[in-house]
Length: 170
Length: 141
Image 1: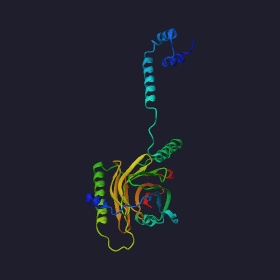
Image 2: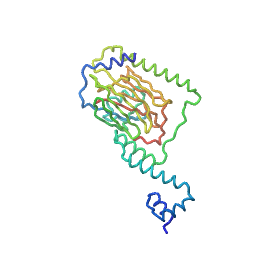
Image 3: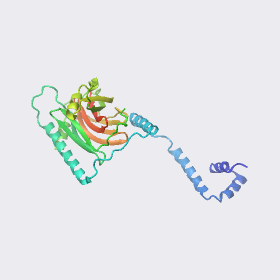
């Protein structure tokens, strides 16, 4: 007689017939969860047949780099340590107000430097401008800064995690 | 005011020819006793970085270049940890209007709409590293 597992697999696949099927289903009456298991396997098979093909990749370069980074992170020992945020002691409202004020000041700075005519300068004018910017996380603030003296536009991001010496830059 | 600026930026006289490239770099700015000369790729704006951020050495960690085309998206991966999505919204007479999104590992940091032109790099202040300040540079070549 075949082992139980072998007969169970054959039963799920619908390979048992006749007397063998009847005997096995009598034996299965002691395992009421088996019927649900078979239903789940058959449903999975239907889903795989219907939706088996993967969608085409839109950005293969980004996907490859992200995948390699994920593999390396899982194979290497943990190397990143989080530093406690210096925000402890300040309320969220206070930080939100400060971030909002910094954004407004930055935008005024950029707009005034781009709309007001510049004096002199025979060389090509510096053109980099931030039209608008927003941070993706609630704990991060973004400010657009332009310095006429240094002739540079900087997108200043605050609230990012500090990266320790063990964090490999590559 | 923002609408007025957007209107001014959206008035092209003639669009730039395709074939331009967009270059991004991850740079580490540090203060050291004996600073080294920056690599040739950084020569154009290492002075700006040093002066604005207050460091005396600028090192190139990595860079990436892609061609620019209107209404297209490019992924720039200057390092394994930092990458950018750059969507070209409009070609202007002297540059491009871009949507730029900066990522650090799996985290999206910031999304910005920016106008860039050759010779006018955009600097993005990234996180502080134990060795110094990380800065992402974005420039049209």
